[in-house]
Amino acid sequence: MKFKNDELKVAANAIRVLVADMVEKANSGHPGGAMGQADVAATLWLEYLKVNPAEPLWEGRDRLVFSGGHCSPLVYSLFHLSGMDGLSLDEVKNFRQFGSRTAGHPERELIRGIEVTTGPLGQGLAMGVGLALAAKMKSARNRTWVLCGDGDMEEGISHEACSFAGTLKLGGLTVVYDSNDITIEGHATLAMKDDTKKRFESYGWKVFECDGHDFDSIRGAFDAAVAESGAPVLVISHTHIGNGAPTKHDTAGVHGAPLGAEELAATKKALGYDPEKSFDVPEEAYAMFARRAAEVAEDAKDRGTSAAPAIDAAKLTALLPAFDPAKAVATRAACGTVMNALAEGCPELVGGSADLEPSNKTGLKKYGWISAEDFSGRNIHFGIRELAMTSIVNGMAAYGGLRPFGATFFVFSDYCKPAIRLASLMGLPSMFVFSHDSFYVGEDGPTHEPVEQIASLRVTPNLDVYRPADANETGACWVEMLKRTEGPSCILTTRQNLPILPEATPDKVAKGGYVLFDAKGDDPVLFVATGSEVHLCLAAAKELAASGRGARVVSMPCVELFLRQDAAYQAEVLPASMKKRVLAEAGSFQGLLRFARDLDTTRFLTLDHFGASGPYKVLAQEFGFTAEHALALAKEL
Ligand SMILES: Cc1ncc(C[n+]2csc(CCOP(=O)(O)OP(=O)(O)O)c2C)c(N)n1
Ligand SMILES: [Mg+2]
Image 1 (cartoon, rainbow, N blue to C red):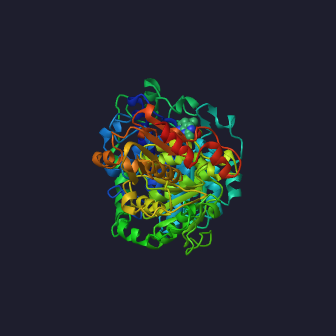
Image 2 (image 1 turned 180 degrees about the vertical axis):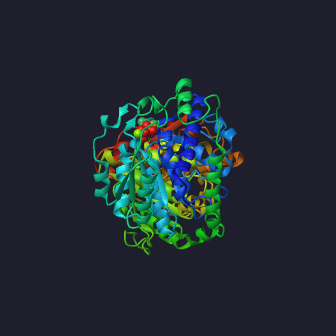
Image 3 (image 1 turned 90 degrees about the horizontal axis):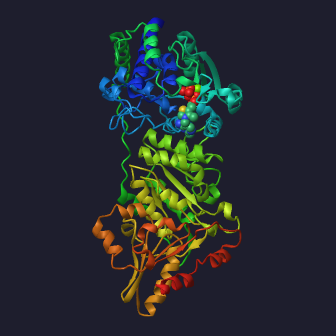
């Protein structure tokens, strides 16, 4: 569908004025970037983008990402004008108010049609790469469009994600860069002087430029973008921030503050609007969006909406490998064995590592590695790009129909953290495998030995953190991770071998924490442990029991899952009466702190300082990670 240029101008100005009114009424928000992108956004939506506002999750839809989440008034204008998920004018008027769907930054969970939550600059761009990659891997024909700005280009993640996309010659992806040369502190060149065009060309992208206020120029670039199928495309759209505001356009001041009554009135006058009226949308604008919606709806008619793949837990559990009880195995190795077994029953499982696959053991051996020439494999070389990997996994999870994972050393989860947080906020079922989970890494030393990471992940809302104690727990944890659809999970695995726990059955692990060993006796000590420390506690508890004292060991592979069990089960596993407790985990004491009942009768077998370089057996002695020390701590109680 093509509109006349002066028709597009009507739509673009309707967006501009709505944006300005929204920010003015809320007395909060960012009008500049949204107003500056109005011409590009109107052209994209009305002539190129395939979305069906009446069926926001239609499977064949183009995916649109607003990477500059601060430009949310642009999102809400487009969604209201087109009727996306029924967004009403009253909701637009409620911009940024408590409980409204028109939140400060666009949130995936609030309005269907917002593909991914954005706000932390750069991540939208990387998730766009993930959406485009998912489309390729599913042989889908939809396109991915990303709108982004100077901030996204300055962020390091843009380099990681776009280099990755160039390597894969990721066609179907168009990134429209709103190059207005303004950020918060002033002109963009204050902090960025690289040549974006050359930079992207060096990644293998096709780059086109346009005047983002000239509809023919915009169409020229978009037509070229759509015609390109063998590479990702960057459209550098030269615009003026705050375009339409007579005195404030082109200034940093219009980035993130209301125009003010005077400038707003002058803007409306200049655009032919009545300065006395607010939220006054011309019927002609609604009619144009309705015509476009009808056109796409016709196209969408015979195609469904994407449903999350149903995970059959019983079927997956039956696929779990049996581990020889006599043979100690590192949980990273068990993890690889388990993933390969589950991959058979879960065709949606795809992913890769940030260049550490031989260490993480995450390769799905029966399946190929994707490349620019062939996307039929299930393994991905993410390259040494942990943050982009995590965001790309999120984008793939957001696409639907895939269960993607990323992997690296646990200590580098810090590099992944901003995107893990966003996955948690969005409730996306992204999965992460973090091997080398503690100081037991040994010789690589403190740069590679996680300490505070486990506690910091556990304080992230809506994130499940699994730290299995053996191969059997590892398998059961994987089934739990695949069952989860409402948020991300990560699994921490060991480099070193661990004995097998035949008692660790999937039904027990499914409760997050369970009684692994229980000896009745006087004055009992309760051990709560995760991962490798379960074995130290088990040895200590057996000693205590042999001396006639009560001793219980609770293995706690997933604190979050345990805390979702009913109160009765939790009390049964951790009776309030058992106040004498040893909490054991090779990381910060804060990781298991919530299981202390009384600090005076609690001992911590934890690591509260950085590790060191050396053979892990020496480090374990030095740091007190021995059964003797666990026993001594218990005896102190
Ligand atoms: C990771 C991250 N850092 C900082 C910010 C705060 N912030 C929001 S917008 C912005 C400037 C963005 O400039 P640009 O992308 O050019 O947007 P424009 O001013 O053109 O609208 C900054 C620093 C953020 N949202 N995310
Ligand atoms: Mg800018």
